[in-house]
Length: 389
Length: 230
Image (cartoon, rainbow over all chains, first blue to last red; front, top):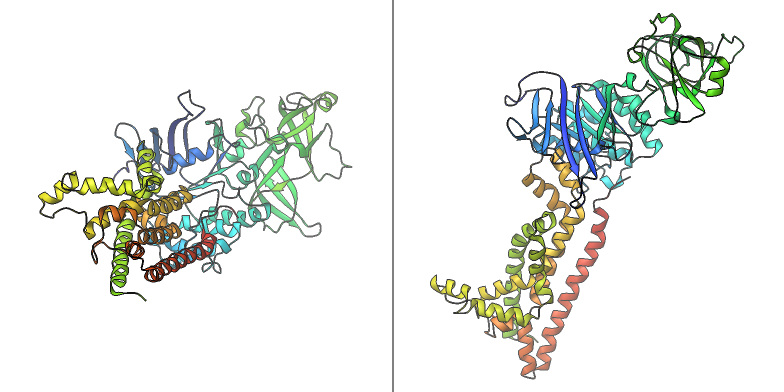
């Protein structure tokens, strides 16, 4: 794609922004302040995660230019979209090379599905070839829906048309604001594979707002965690979704996210073996072929601990681990035990974030009975492992 | 049946209503758009002014227009200095008076239609690289179509039914300012009841048909409104 000669100074592949935006009712002090300063990779999917009202959507609207923000800076892959100094720049929304998918599927009701797509295609930054148009239509599975009027489409179909429409302006940054939140579970399941395909087949950086840990675990490569208008933490998704002190309360959803590779399939027992940095798992065979990369999630509540290996157990995955850290859970009866693979040979006191680990959520009483402390050898029994993608 | 002067009055009325409707659609649409979208302090006073003809007795409006356009009024002085004479008792004078009188009937439906869209369609259009002008023509106006139709029909029908203002500033000049409503008044004054009946019935049927068509149309149109969610 042709970069515009103005504004383009470096080819740094990152999205850097700073927004300060107080919201107030009346003359009193601000009720809510968006105050963020971030830098995320200029490729892949960056999840923006946080509870409702944490400012995720406001941040996305600021990046799109839909929300005016005087005190702001925004550079996307070397191009300045917004800056206060040294020179005031503020690209209007229609000049920003973005695609935006709203939470509610917002198709133009006076146009058909195909008309909505044509609206975008006609205004695209670069001409959209017929092949590329057909590819996007196929990617979102819209071949048979183009003649339909929006009111006759289901919520899931409308959202697929919205996504295709956003792609047809040939954006250099795709912004998605909880595109699945307005849909029921069945519709979510219908759309998620399309989003994954999108991730694999298009080389556009995506900012993906969600309050669903499931969607984030499945889609995000990188993560911004937000709460009360501020960014609490930023980093690779696998790292942030595997820490015991995750700043947003997850409760039963706390766990670790691991990248693994399918190494073998066992047709007799309908199982497959997956290798991750700290060992291997047996998983139910879900059709992946050997060598395929998968992402798996192990929830802390699905991990139990034994001092010695229990050969008589029905639990298939038993891993020799060493306790790294024991932290309090939000529930006073429970603790979180973070463990590293025993043969990974980690020196004690290693920074926990850059190594693979597993977390178990057990009662304080069990902790006491097993007499666990830092560096204790322990067997982790993993009751279930979810393949998130 | 209808006499030649009745037909002249009908022709004049249609000419007046068409001219006024066309002008009002051109002038009223941007005004309605501004009222629907502005956050300016002026929104209140401007809305009040636009709505004023709805509540004011037509004679009051007519009286001020007569003064304003008369030889001593500011507009009258201007038109006289331009060599156009004064506007009262002329067709252009009727057009100006009708513009003011029918303004709220055109502005309000359009304003409501644009307000009911909310910001979302325009925001979506902007993210699809449509500039403000593009977005106005290809999103805001098409979505406001039911409102635009209502505005045109109401503006036309209301101008056809105008009486008080016209009597005040236009008087009763056949072929120039004598519209149907005044013709009917004249018939009644002259005790020509059967003539008055013919014209009145025509007006009644016309107004009813217009409103009926409008409501039937609206019922179908609401199905295409902007809706959220699955």
